[in-house]
Image 1 (cartoon, rainbow, N blue to C red):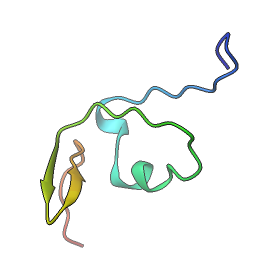
Image 2: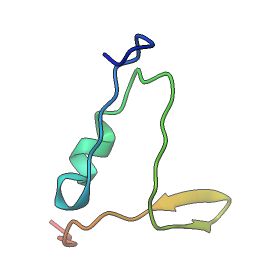
Image 3: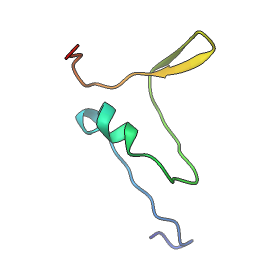
Image 4: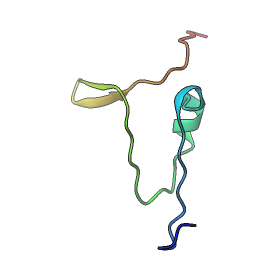
Length: 54
């Protein structure tokens, strides 16, 4: 907890995976500094995780 009572998690680089992003349920505020794009009216977020089609 910081001095204002917030729980803050700072995650960088290879630790930001698709599985990590899937577990973001329940957060009140998310600040994501990421590469992204918009396709079909949806925001697409990129990670450093290597693509694996399996």
